[in-house]
Length: 447
Image (cartoon, rainbow, N blue to C red):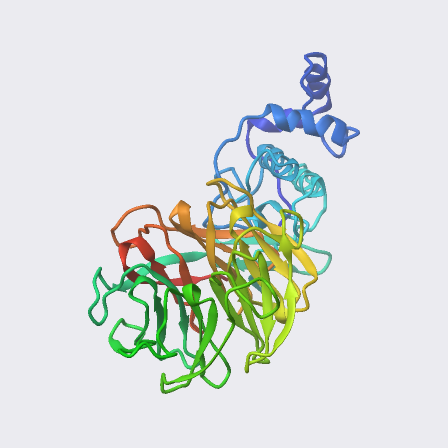
């Protein structure tokens, strides 16, 4: 938060006389809030004419977005307006939202400009921070706001997401080896990691450090427990394990001792039928949601497999899907679904009502190339395995971009088409690095 002043030579751009000269030159330039009639008709052409300087600073994401000092200057406000009209990407988005709410609008640029020209405004910070009352001066890690009665300091915590911790696995068929690992899940007490070892047609269980524990979902006699192309896994409140058995077009349920317990589904497009299901999630009431990928829908079931409802239909509009893959449960039971062939994430209520969506095809922040698994943490942040961009992206619950990590490769912290993701209660991130046939573990701190 802060009452900001212009501290460089660009302050002259904010004077009316220069705005008038710029107008005569057919380039509208921002005038001061105090001295000029500031309208969007002037603002938008000015912003579109200004070249971007750099991406937003990550160290103090709720401070100024561009300049090197602790206070914003005129070009920061221009960048904010560019973000509002869609010609720039603000990373993280909250750094361009001094009004304290998202999405970014032209009002954020006006508030920024008012502060930069010494207007008495209070800038809010939606990134997330701790607030204390103090009389100290502003330092490089705080933003100070003077009010009528006190000075409030917001202590910012930078996002630190994607620190490599460990990895395990290699290509093969032995214990602890993988052939195209897909979805994964963490046990309720964080003591176990379940991995869908897709092309080995089995499930593997590990401790959080990668120590091998068990294999299940196999049968020498070809019994009902034998999996064929398992794609994802989820755990209910009592520890039962549910596997989307893709090439068997069913859900297979296993007990806490890994013994086969139940199954439902068959090939088809009617209710409770599937065509290569690829994602699964379970809410707090043990309702089971299955991404019925080829049928372009989500199906909901009870924990015993009783069909409850179908969500979505084929298409590209809100609430429609094209090859939905990943699914996660977030705040208030909302579902976050990777709409893979539409290159976006859709947020739906558990009853099927469309809430919001974000993303498009591309490689920029908030853009996707075949997004796969989705996971949420205890703070309702959303993690997406952005498969063909070989990275993980992190968003808040409304879809505002927060962080990303990873690039194509086989080294630590690199990925080759990551397809599975899970978060434990400590915020550690487990990623199925699919074509590298391994699991990688990362830490993540989001204030």
